[in-house]
Amino acid sequence: MAILFGLAACSTPSTKDQSSRPVKATGSQELKLEDLLTSQLEGVEGTEVVVSRVTIPPHTSLPKHWHPGEEFAYVLEGSAVLWQEGKADVIGKKGDVVKVPLKQIHTAITTEEGATILVFRVHELGKPQRTIVE
Image 1: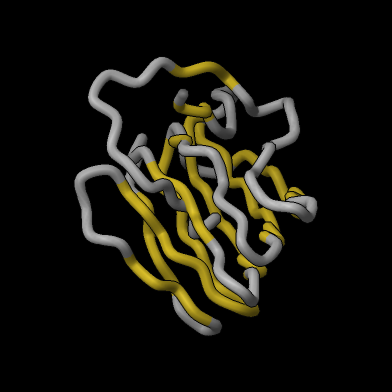
Image 2: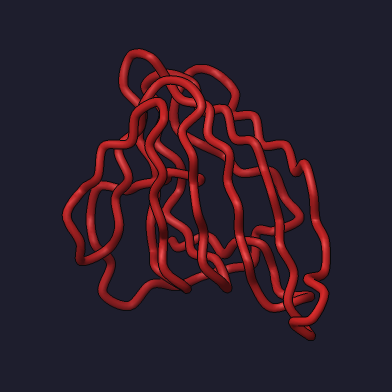
């Protein structure tokens, strides 16, 4: 999802489009982001779905970001803390599903086991997949 989280809220974030660049995370190992499917939704003009598998190494914090649509994340392995600006943290573990609302600033943080997450995003066709918040 990515179940993705951050540690502190931002009041007026500056943002930049990061959809075509690799996502950099803090931690000693490499984050793996694999888009499995990108497809326009039939019957819903101007809307697409993106399905991705995200493998987040242990002790990693993803950059805070948001998506131009809703995100649904299913934890395949491990666990991660989902941080969403203005909301309580959610711990997602194997078998859990979480929803991140439209344009919600969020991040994911792993502990000793890392996590593999299957992410489904539905958003406006042609928009960046994610925007990093600085």
